[in-house]
Image (cartoon, rainbow, N blue to C red; front, side, top):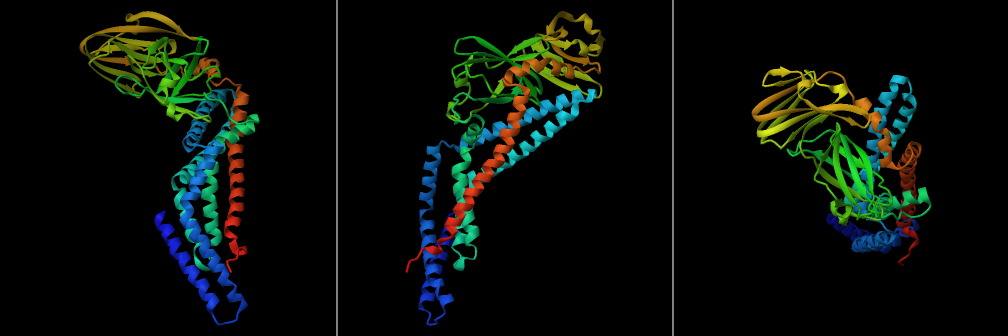
Length: 457
């Protein structure tokens, strides 16, 4: 950046001397003489820009802050929209797979393609924002250097780059307010709009790739609100908490699988304490947390392996070819629990190569929403290898269908309204806002590049 400004500074000096030389030429050519005042005025203008570029961006910072723009929260806002789109695509893809069996997947296919397109637009918008945020000074300095080239060879291109850096640096962080203005007709003012996301790990820092989280939230009336959130590829997302949930609301998170609620490291903690309040914004709040689940060794597709107490040594491996789960456990005295829905009843359990029917170990049964299942308990003392042989049936489509009514409580809007909001806000508003900024940029570029009307002599 500084080197480009130095180049612009010396080019402006060169331009000034060239302009003075044009005045001193004894040749009475009007076309050549006209370049004298132009070059001198261009040199003084570029010199002023080179010296005052820091003051220009300080004023830009003041103007952006006054209008309510914040780069950190704007980037968080875009991240939240990308996460929301990705989550929606995952849910719609699962629903499309289920409905394809009934020949009803074409409508969802059109919606999925539209949301995919909006995701591409948002990603391009996010990349553009990162470029402007990190290199706006370099872009502006390059623009000034191009404008400083004598005889206005690259003046238009330089003026465009300078205008682009100024306009986009000021106006891009105002995008969240623009979105809310289009939707509601007034500026965004909710203080507790939060997206919470994170990973699920057990006590060995092993990622639990699937399952569900149950959230207990206490509103200002101290009344518990229950929400169910799915886990996909080890990550969960919580969108659009209700308006009666504030930063002081207490939250408790359970890992909810196969008829059991497992405690986590988040129990009766306020959102204010859970999320870093320095990242709050009147536009958006992106909160990343890590949920530690107690006692769970493994979960997938309706079967859970959990242990109490937590063993000294343990190793779990799933072999999809043999459809088996191998558990190597070393503990003085612990119990290994195998919880499964009825469609995933293990065919056998082998302890140190001695296989037995799973029914010999069943201790109790339960109902998990609309699914029934049981839990087998195996006592472990010392070093043992437990091999759980699974059948090939899968309950995942049943689990997804059974959770649809629960998942709707997380979004708090109807599916059609949710899809319309995605299409309108995340696709049309981004393109419209970029077109508006480009129009302003072109106008400012013409103003910066048209200094021929200014006369020094």
